[in-house]
Each structure stands twice: as C-alpha cells, then as structure tokens.
Length: 442
Image 1: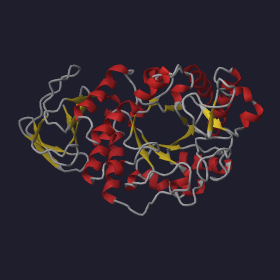
Image 2 (image 1 turned 30 degrees about the horizontal axis):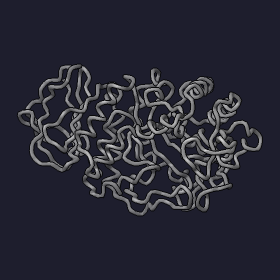
Image 3 (image 1 turned 180 degrees about the vertical axis):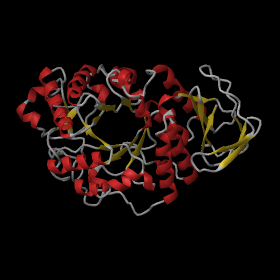
C-alpha cells in the first residue's frame, strides 16, 4: 500500500498492450516476436489489458469487449493457451521486465460462470433483475461485494495469476469496489509475492461526485492510496484536455498538478499519460510533432510512472476498437520520436526522479512549464515550451521553501534530451521549441 510503496515506482515506464489489436493475428505468440523492440524502448513493466474469455451474451461489436469477462481464471482462447501465457511471462521476466494484467472486478459478462454457479454474487435492481448501479451498460452486470463469499472467490482468482508469475494487477475502476476488499486481497497476495504491485484506475472528480450523489460508495484517490501503489491521473487529465482545446489556461492546468503535492501521501505515485485505451490518441489531440515531443517529454519528467499505450511510439492516431478487430498500423515509424522515448525512459531511471523534491514553478512566461527535482546535492531542471513561446525564461528559484538552490552560473548547460548545450546568462533561459532537461550539481 502507498505508505510502503517503493519510491522507485517513480522510475518506471509501463507499456500497455491490447493483445487482440497489437498485431493482425492478435495472439500471445505475436507478443514474443515484439519483446525485444518493447525492451529497447526502456520498458520496465508490461500491462496486458484483460486476457480472460469474453462474454458472448449481449456482447458488443463482432468480438465483444475484453472488459466483459466470462471467467476470471481462464485465458481468452483468441490469444492462446494458459501454457502460452505462462511461457510469455517467463520470457518477459528473463528480460528483466515485470508483468501486470488487467482485472475487472466491478462487473462481469451476462454469461459469466458466477451467474450460473453463484447468482447471489450479483447486484440486483429494485425490480430484482441483474443490472448496473451506475449506468445501463448492456453487455455487463454488476457484482455485489456485500456478499463475503464473493470476496474469496475473487481473491483466489488473483492468487492463481500471482502464483503463475504475474507481478501486479491494474484494477479497473478500483474505487467502486470496497477498499476493504482490496486490502484483504493485497494481504493474501503478499503471501505469494511480497512485492506485488497494485495499480488503480481511479476516476475523474466529476464522475466520483456523480456516483456519490447517486448514493453509491466510491473511494477518492486519497482513500485509494491506502491500498494501492499507483493511481490514475484523471484528476488532472480533464484540465490537460481542456488546455489543448483552448478551454482553460495552462496555469489552471498546472494549479491542479501542484495540488497533488498537498492532498496525497508524501510518496504518492501517479500514472502519467497523454493517452491510454480509454482516451484519444495523443497524436490525434496534438497533431503538431514538435508539441507532441514536448508533451511526451513532460509526461516522462512528471512525478510518477510513465505510461506508453502500444502504438503511441509510432504516433498512431486511431484509437483501437474494444469490440472488433482493429490492429495498430506499425508501418509509420518516426525514428527520432522513438529515440526520444528511449532517451526519456532511460533518463527516468535516474535516482533523483524517486528521491528528489518535485516542484512546478510559476513561470514568468505564460505557455511554459518550468519544474524541478531537488536534493541536497543536485537539481534537475525541466523546461517545456508547450505554448511555442519565444524570449527568455527566468529560471531563478525563489518559491522553494524546502531546499536552498544556488543561482545558476553564466555558462552552458547540457540538455539531457538532445546532448546539445544551452547558454544561460543572468538566470535567463533562451526558449526554443525543444524541451530541455538539464542537471546542476553542487
């Protein structure tokens, strides 16, 4: 749980894979053939979207949604066999990468094995029918965690996969399942793997509020950190999206970012992303290649684990369908952009990202993100010109109340992203389109 979560999670790069649409054939065997390329990106953890059989009753699309699960302990035959998956785990581990799988515990498909064997595991509407507490999703029905027998069945499924070698779980809409359940699940999982990783898909503030207003309990991010190591960044994604669409200022967005330092545990870890399978592709939102590189650089620089959704590295614009065969187009490879990701993921592994005090400063130029990590012996500066501004940025730090940071000398500083040098004079940084990360030791 958060108070014991290793700080080094902030050094990690996570790579999300939807097996069905990762390749044209969409099997575990295809993933074997792509592991060296993924490793070369600097990936530390591979997250597989749900690998379980998909319900066919009331399914959506031609193949159904992977988040409508018919059996939590089985493998989707589209992808291969359990033996295939076990071999894949072992191969990934041999490359010093961890494996995380998606678990969807709020609801099941209409033809889940539970419905036949344990109908009492399910939530019922006022009319006594199977259904949903929040919205009317036609392909799924909700579980009822007021039933203690459900708890152990669900935990046993997690224990099976942990025993098979899975290192962690990304838990779909985790806050709507009782935190007490997740705490007990974690306790039992740690008996198998003391270093088990739990990533919570937490939700947007407006969604949390609407659920609570409907009389349905749902945990906040702060509450979720009692059990989980990493939470989603949806509490600021809305502002990010609004900024890109011209609906809020950069300062408003960054104010929400700064607030995280005050409302979450001291060692909190956020999942930082500019795309995932539920939101538009980054290239779609940010068509300008220079700005896409800048936002990607800031994503890696931020305090937390960085997420790459497969296809992001080739600037895929199509958000793959959850319900049909819709493979990623891997033909458009931008080598400089891939090199950027490789360098950023390598840089993120430096200890200061885990141990330094992080601060987003108030920049004197609107449209520029100016942030630092500081320890008693070094400072890592990050400057991200997301507004494509020109001129000089004042990089003196007078809003720092935790560590004294010496003034920058008039000299050239190496941009760790490009290996180019930038000259700073009188505490002023000359802005360009290129994101800049540089180190000062003292």
